[in-house]
Image (cartoon, rainbow, N blue to C red):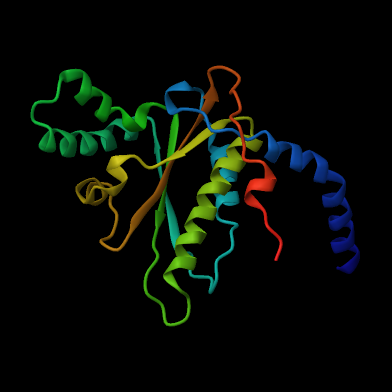
Length: 202
């Protein structure tokens, strides 16, 4: 057993430059710039498996995933459209169509649902952070498989009518909608903060 662990550690060390290069090249891509085909069933399973391997104090699993693909994207979009038109009766046909297709802009959308709740030992804040880590792992896993992704919320993530229609429990919230597809063009990077601006030493 020890020999296997050592061998695994050596293998991981040898792959470290490759893994770091992968992480350094991750870039968000706008949902409208994500094309198909999306992940296969096996690739989706891999993405979700990686997403579930995050720090989780108390092993509460304070998150879950909702997968939107195919016709399910516009079916869910109908709930978004309904809330939008209720609040915007003068909306144009183009505006309504845009809202209806919010989740149809990419081949695959995965909602990360935070199930954080009061606990005798585990602070809710830590549970929320765990959901954020799951969302980030989704994005990273998609990138590792050659896809691009965008983790966003937008207004409907905070609309209780939409959340109810998507099947969320009253205490559940959306940590993010992760849109996944193939980039229509090589993504451009954006300026990143210099370490001197964000790192201090105590």
